[in-house]
Length: 270
Image (cartoon, rainbow, N blue to C red; front, top):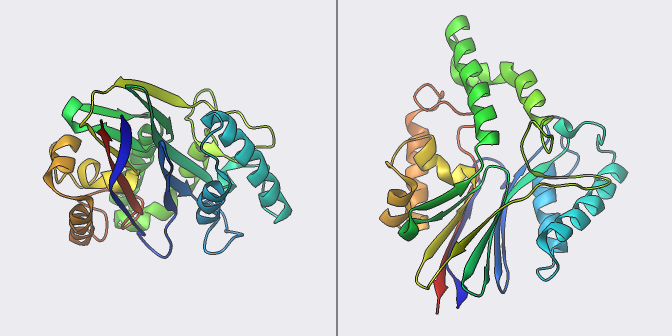
């Protein structure tokens, strides 16, 4: 058996796309970068630099965790030489990753951060709730400020910066969440899942921005329904329309008008 690519989709949400993907022989990845909560030192953003650097340096063959550590240390040195703030992870770029690899009849799913993997035919959804739970707390505070001050949630977003910084500092901490980050001596906790497959299974690897169509805008009752409804390219216009319905974030509370959206549709073939 092998994994084949059926469709790929990525689109920027604003000025630049901080998402990306890697298409290997037997390893497929979706990446979602996040620029630190300070001023970028790379153009167009620190997150887009990190995603590009990871893709450029990544080798499929070595163990995935070891590759992550090698690239993390290399990018740390480059970021430091460029004058980046390496003393506080809140001001450094980070990156979520979801990936799939086939070994015999076992599909191995790799996860760092808040991306997701879905296999509709098996009713399988694989994601980590830790970072989304922190985002939910910040979103709740944003809506409270909106109501208390009589301002829009979009305006209130500017007033939760301290909460977001505190949450960023939980990256790769025991009481926080796992994410790819820059470290002088890298240490990551990657979440994995092994799924027996027999052939014919469709696999979707998606960034949280793509998953907003279901999770934030509630246009489908399940991820399964969403992925089985349309090709990826036909789903994105629905994301844009949903954001357009709520430009001030009242109906669909969120941190950005529209996030970068990336998804790979893969299939296991005999």
